[in-house]
Length: 367
Image 1: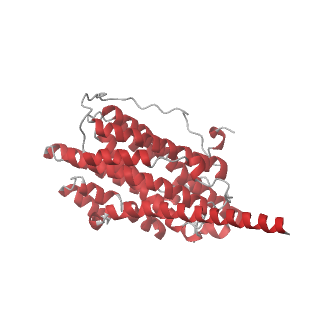
Image 2: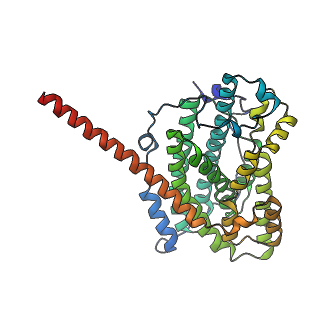
């Protein structure tokens, strides 16, 4: 079955074309590079993995509750619509929400792959090109994994959210080489990381937990790369140039906060757009989720040197200013440790099963 047949609302055009701008830059300096970036490049090579084998795809998934989503997290909960819903209707709603979330993850990962390839092309320094090449492969793997989960386990996809598509387009159309870093590595990936982490830490379903933990282990390197490259570059920019980038960040943050809400899911259940927007704004779960969405972005923006008065005022308005003091390095370390612990638990269980199988065979032979 083609992906087009699985879309709830089919995209108007199966091929989205974004006009490219900017220069392809070659560096003839092959001997030197920043030690930190070259170390990250080495780590990127060492940490490559195969999504077909590291993830246990034999785990069964209930398509009507793929993530173990509690009732309270569904925006229709407690409304007049919820009172009329059967258990089957509620299962359908969980399936649609899970499909919508993971579909946006999938589309974002394809965007990240394209942006990483664009960085390879446009960034002037060879050390950054080398690392970006490893990230392009990472993002391809992530797109593969999310696509497989949606096709094989959920059986339903949603088109890319208009606001996410708009931010991707703005990021890719800009001819300045640092903008794919800023739009993708800081904003889109930072927001995605927070969403991944919230589901990873709350789901009781083993397959999505594996997927999200392993993807986040890669993303910890990607964010570190963006921080290193942009921090060095932004020290050289004028106040006017920094303000331009801060405006881009402000606009992108408001866009993601106000528009990435899953309203289109409720519309597919017969709720008007106006009413769906009201329900999402009243959701306590959404308010918590929004706050967490910026837990990765705000400290990163501050770290790379974009912390002017207008940006600080915007974060105060969003109620996330205090997150600028979050320990981003600690969060990234935890992401790596969680993935490694999942590996350890899984392989210990597999080893124990093999030992038990051998012992049973020996016992049967003796009998």
